Length: 224
Image 1: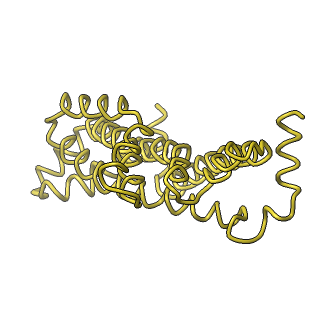
Image 2: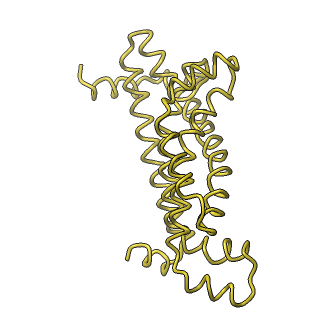
Image 3: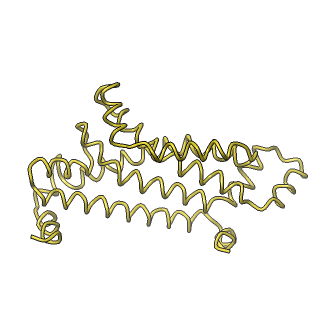
């Protein structure tokens, strides 16, 4: 059988659409893991990137952190944390956050540093506080690039959240892990197809978010 035959057999089987192991349930679990990890990563990466980008300090340190974060093996970190902390959600979330923070952090820093200094100087000359300058001047101008960093992090999390299945959790990785164990390649291909489809949906969501939140003038400036 070809990969397309395996995929067709998986999705045409009605038992895969119902119950605790059904596609809607597994997709919901996977999206939940993704949103939780992305929220934690954004809570860390966005403020640090905004502040360091605004003051223009720490760029080399951020680059070092990003390189170290990308070099860490996600699955190896999962196994190590599970041995240290036991089974739970923390050993799953930590590797995903470590994976996702670097693109958010570095992209946010670079986005703020690339903002035209003229409006920033004008805002400072009008007596605006530094926090207001960051949030009301620099953030709207740098939003397209920041969303790009969030998009990259989200796609990486969607693709990697399958590791939750290795330590007994659900999500789309359940199909891949169980399928390999059972030598049920319909499940393996079906799970991989769903992960790829969810990654494409994530790209579409961020494209729509960019259209809704970024002004046309800022989008034109970003493309220029």
